[in-house]
Every structure is written in C-alpha cells, then in structure tokens.
Amino acid sequence: MKKLIAFSAIIAILSSCSSGDRGELVGTKGKAWHPEKPFGMTLVPGGSFIMGKSDDDFVAVNDAPTKTVTVRSFYMDETEITNAEYRQFVYWVRDSTVRLKLAILADEVGATPGDEGIGDYAFVDQENEEMTPYDQYMYDNYFGMGDDFYAGRKINNTPDIQWDTASYPDEYYSEVMDTMYIPAEEAYNGQRTIDVTKLKFQYTYMDIEAAARAAKNGSSDRKEFIKKEELLIYPDTTVWVRDYNYSYNEPMHNDYFWHQAYGDYPVVGVSWHQAKAFTAWRTLYKNSYQKERKRQHINSFRLPSEAEWEYAARGGLESATFPWGGPYTKNDRGCFMANFKPLRGDYAADQALYTVEAKSYEPNDYNLYNMAGNVSEWVASSYEPSSYDYTSNMNPNVNDPENKRKVVRGGSWKDIAYFLQVSSRDYEYADSARSYIGFRTVQDYMGTDVVLNEKLGDAR
Image (tube, rainbow, N blue to C red):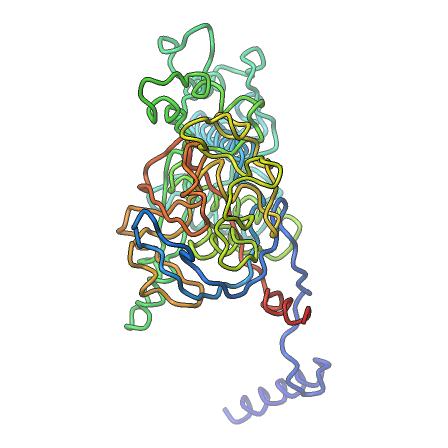
C-alpha cells in the first residue's frame, strides 16, 4: 500500500513538471472566445434606466409606477420576426416530420440505406459505417427506451425530399407523403395543401429558477425540472377574420403568411407558446451549425423580459414617451413616426392600412425598428398589475407559469397612440393568437465589459 501511495505521488510530481506551468496556478486553458454578433441583431449595452410612466397615466391603469432598474447587456433582433423567418422554422419542422415518417416506414418494411426508393431515407444507424463510437454506443444502449420507441436514432438529412408527385421513388414514399396533405375531399380548386396539424415541434428545457430554489431546500432530482413541450407551430391565419366582425379581411387570411409578397412583414397569429418554441428552435438550429464546425455552443435565444424590452425601446433616451422621444407622434415635417391607428380610425394616414415591412420608419438610437406600432410584441414576463412594487432592481422579471396572462408591448397597427408609449403595458393570454401581435428575440451578451454607463463616463 505504501508503495502504491509513493508511486502515485511520483506520477503527480512528474505530471506537474511536464505541464509547462512551472507549478504555478495559471488556470485551465481553452479556446479563445470572441463574441459574435448574431445575424440581424444589435447589441443593447447594459445599464440603468427609469422604468414606468414618467407622464400622467391619464387612463388611470396605474400599473407602471416609475422605478430605477438595471439590466445586463444583450443582443436584440433589429426587427420583429418576419413571415420569411418564421417560415424557415415551419419548413424545418415540415421537412423533419417527413424525414422521420419516411425513416419509420423504411424500418417497418426492412429497407436499409443501401436500398433504393424509401431506403434512401432510412435511419442512419448500425447500417452506416460512418457512425462514431459514441453514436454506436447511444444506439446500442438507448434506442427504443422511454416513451419514444425511435429515440436515439438519427434521420438521414442527405437526400432531397421530393415534393413533385411525378418524382416519388416508390409506393412507400407515396404513402408517407399522402399523410402530409389534407384529404382529397377537403381540397378545392385542385390544390394540394399541407395538413398543418401534422407540423408539431417538440423540445425540452430545464426550469433553472425552480431547480435552484429546490436545491436550496435539499432537492437534487434534476428530472423533476426538465420540461418537455410539444405544440403545433403553424400560425393561426384565421385571426384576420376572427379578430374583426363585419370586416372583409379574407385576402390577409389567404395570403399574408405564405405569400412571398409579405415575406418581410412581421409574422402574426403566433401565440406566446409558439414564440417561445421558435426561440428554442433558433437555438437548436444555430448550435447544430456550431457543433458541425467544432465551435462552442451559443447562449440560448429567448423572449425579452419586460424590463429589457422597455430599456431597448427607449434607445437610451431617459423618461421619453416614445422610442423617438416625443411627446408627439409626428415629426417636424408632419409625418407619422409609426404605424398605428391615428385620427380616430384613419388607418391610411400613416401610409399603412395593416402591418408594414419590418424595416419601416426610422429606428431608435439602438437601431431597433418598430419598437412602437406595427405589431405588439410578446415578452417573457407574466402580467401582474403590481409587479413593479416587488420585483428586483437588477434584471427584474416576473414569469409565473400559473399566470396565463403574458405581457405584450409596443402597440400595433390597430392601436391608438397610448399603447405606443414605451411605458404602456398590455397583456394577452399565452395560448391566444392575434392579427396584431408578433415578437422578437434576444440573446444574452457573453461578458460584462459593454455597458451604457461606461460609455457615458468615457464621454465625460
């Protein structure tokens, strides 16, 4: 036993001598981290601001008293998420669903990647010589466990999906594709329409806040705090009809989401849950790219907190009424500064009847477009009328899972000017979708060296 201890000590000494650190505490080494600005986002430098109503609350809601708070630096989308961007999410889910269905049927009929036809879309598993030892281990030990029989198997993303019926390779492929469309008796004008009820996105996340509080009380069961969500992700296009009685809006219902003419317009008809699912997919999509290139994973995309949204909307202007300052909604040339409902319902007075392109009007001083008007925006926070009275002054946020009322900010094309004010609060139920509510995402900035107060100090 003494010899073993002495041998271990010698090994430890030799290991220390060969490390090149001269026995000093130099810390572990890793790849240098260089912050990368996400595409389409702008950096909002952290700092303090006065949150809440700086003017008289003439509607007497009294849910936004002034309060000095501080938020950390973060990236934010320059525009609301557009139809084209959300369609990328929808198409990804659609294609993944098709590939999974093809792989399952190929497995059931015994087709392998070496076979033609549906075999080209078979699972990439033990038949594939390119599997890594880890993938092989996961397949051997975890395939078929849990609720999902096909968990642990990898779908084949290499072959293109054939959408033209004339290009279907065999009957099995035709059988799968037929399940993706609405039944023939429900179609009209000879159109084959995707059945959007088949477009479900599933993701998991960990409730860090609940887990941290439970750990303080001695609980350590991580599985209890891992949440699994599955939901339909196609926008509810019927909102253009249901939101308005005795109003002809069928063209918006028929064309707004899918037609490329509206590709750069903000997506609407998306619930709070769907907006949250989009942020999870965007994180997964980017991290898949990072993994392929052996780069570090990024921070998660997410919805902004209510405080972050208001801080960003103000654009560094203290106690301003609107993102451009105010107190007026017109500039010095008499043009409206945002897309809203002016002049008692003259929707066209601001050069827009419904929504406008996401990069319309002038951005605020953080280069953020339409932080007032166009569409209201979901944020992560739950609506509590008195939340300003008890939230923290540091990165305040209230997100109660039991509270189905979620805050929307910024006002929309159908709202009066009051809701365009950066301090005005409104809410909608998390499972609701509206023709005037969209969203934008944020991502935490890695590091603390960029703050607004620091910049102001340099200027002085």
